Amino acid sequence: MLTIALLALLCASTSASAIQARASSYNGEYGGGGGKRFSHSSYQLEGPITALRVRVNTLFIVGLQVRYGKVWSEYVGGSLGDLEEIFLNPGESVIQVSGKYKLYLRKLVFVTDKGRYLSFGKDTGTSFNAVPLYPNTVLRFISGRAGAVIDSIGLHWDTYPSSCSSC
Image (cartoon, rainbow, N blue to C red):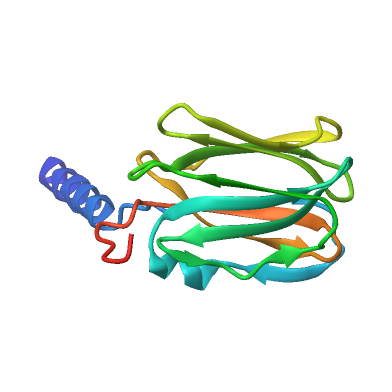
């Protein structure tokens, strides 16, 4: 009787975990506490990340804008420095983000599932390396703090959108 009860409990917990499989995770916030909070959470509804605009100067990541599907997020950060823009290939996703920070974000490296390394900024400060907690998940949106520069960044991971009519 005890064996049957244990078997029933095991089966119930296995099916419950299959139903409640988790996919989303978060890394961060990497950087300092200055600036004003921002979040691109609503933009993920437009589709996957398809391009990045990053403004850099000699010391910091100054500004950031991300394209979700075909829609650009609001630009966050300052206006001084060089603006770099990189487009992802169709179906390409960011699977890792690393970088460096002190009080501000100094370097960002986006790694894609196609083996590309998209690097911005200078190689000084405290290192971080962010990857999703769950398999088969990708970078879905970015949050953080920004003022005249990007003070800090948070990275939000989830499954790739199953359908995207605007991508």
